[in-house]
Image (spheres, rainbow, N blue to C red):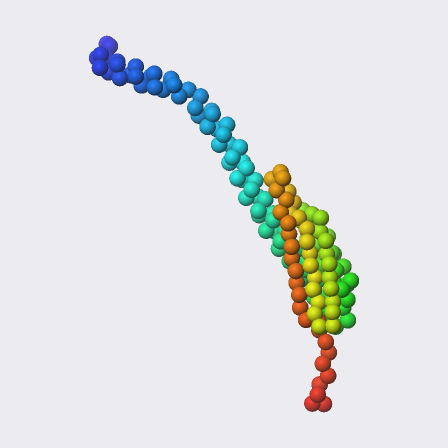
Length: 144
């Protein structure tokens, strides 16, 4: 049983139209897959950058706590920040530099570095700073 002429003509047009799209899905996948993977790597890169920023801020805060203590020094604050970085930053933070200053009134600790690179040629800088007053013993003026 053969289909009527109108249906045969319509089926022929559909077959010819579909024949022209052969390989289109493969071409779309060749373009879409690398873009999707690049977007996924970019998400991972920015998550690592965020984690590295938090680690640097924690190290700067730890160093400040030591540097601003009553008998603390800038060197002790920098050493404390470096010790915390050695414990926490084995993965997310590279090329770290710790600088600490302590004056008569305030102390500060700065941590800089770069986030671990996941996406080639995308090196994201990390900077954290903590500043606070130096702790001083104030004599009791009321004599208690």
